[in-house]
Image (cartoon, rainbow, N blue to C red; front, side, top):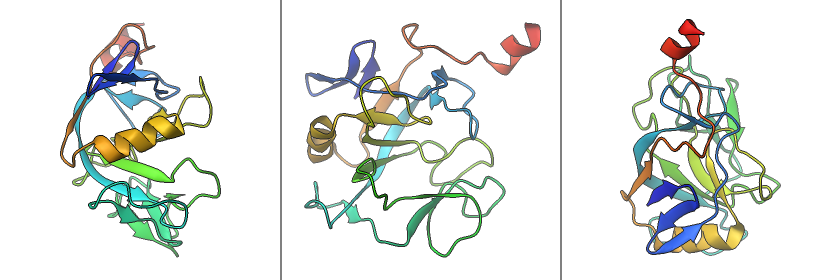
Length: 176
């Protein structure tokens, strides 16, 4: 799998994709809205068993108390946790369909470095042209195809592409 100017290229298909509102970044940080430039592995898959069948045998259901910790100062940073949970987190079992399927990536996972960014998932998009908080988002039918096709451990390459706005590096910001 590889991000291209036309979308995500996989198995001869190009799927339109939305990236983070902060563009692509070589210096991904928590809360910057950027999608990391990196070679990532697909580490796991979560899905809403109350809304669909498992896309693959290795997919695990999202339960009503499942959350994802985004509090960079917490020991469970960038890990799945369960409610009740006080520190910053994302609810995985959402009312909308965005997280009906989530492909987990290896960005800062499973061994997280504080502040380097969390919850870089592949998931359903809100609508065409609507950016994410750093994830890659797809049309529902494309995401279902992707979830049924991808192999656990498969590599997702996100190269530095001039067609996507990029966040300047810290050195470039200091020079400006």
